[in-house]
Image (cartoon, rainbow over all chains, first blue to last red; front, side):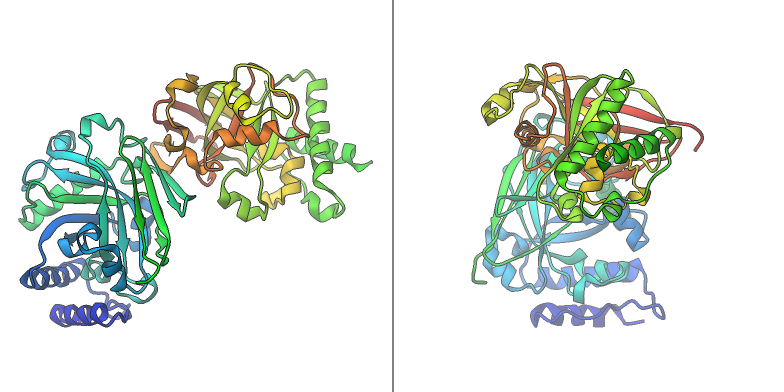
Length: 261
Length: 257
């Protein structure tokens, strides 16, 4: 078994040198989710030690189909820092550090209070200060996005960048399960979905996160952003392209990738 | 010539739920006009038997479906009263070959549409929007269809189950109407109206502009197309489509699972 510290260093090098690597887990050495979380924790510690600020969390593998592919019964969790915020650091700077970036449409929640305990589903709405449409840029540090569950957890669930639209109070949004989502590239519709693509209802992602944090003994402070997970399949990032997402009740958001990155 | 005999073959296949070999392989000279002529003959046979035309369906409205069949435009079929049901319908699995289900948006026309109607006239003719389940089926063996096969086979239609109409003006922007499909209680597909040609009403605009299309009449229903890939359906399945602002519609496939 490759020690978590070595895997952390290897992933750091893959990101720094823009050189994707092969997965760590193999049939001989399957590793496990706990190992993946350990590596991710080392990455988070190193980043915050260098001055990056934790601004939120993200969920992945939130569709049954993706969970079955990975052989897990529930979503996975990664972290977001200010260095991944496309509006803070700029799309050019973030994309320049990637090698096989993709864009996914998402729904984001902003926490009204500290998330410090497992919250039952019927109270989860009380935690939400605002809901927004969002776009996430993912970039696996594994060649061709070929990874197992421990690998993708170690790689912070492929997190690279994110941008969030205008916040709307939850009670003004209407039913999120049937809110339509449209992803376009340069104005042409490429994927559509409804909010129910996220675990049957996007708020269930937040409920899952609360249980995950409680199990880890962690607190996510009020004001943090939570990306609930991809609504549709990802599309490749292309220099010069514009990626638009619209969600009923939440408005729309466009991410322009500079022609030169 | 062979239009009448192909129509008879498809009518028998639909009646007996026994599929036939792909037409496009057996009749390489078949044109798109021929295929629509076969469809018209098929429908004429049904109306001669007492069925009544109550609407239309537009198919192949998503870029994914168009790419799959190598075409760049939709197709259409005709709905008779024997094919259209209300919310809660129990459909007979025995009459189906290899059914699939799609959650769709449909419209009810408030007035007749003359051929060559402008886009504004087409939109103005829409009275209301309805959430619908379309059960599609192919009388062509194993769904090995080309465009011509599905057009001749009445656009692979089998049945439509309609929810309750909502006035167009109250339905909001149809592009971001989200639609979910549950099968036996589990979400199996989601989509939004924009999956239909970018805007669902463009499907009606397309249909109104087709020379082969039968007249579009006030009171008729038009299925505008699916917002997700079709989902296989079997006896005993219960499917529900739900759309933002349009409520939901449920259908059960009768027979033992």
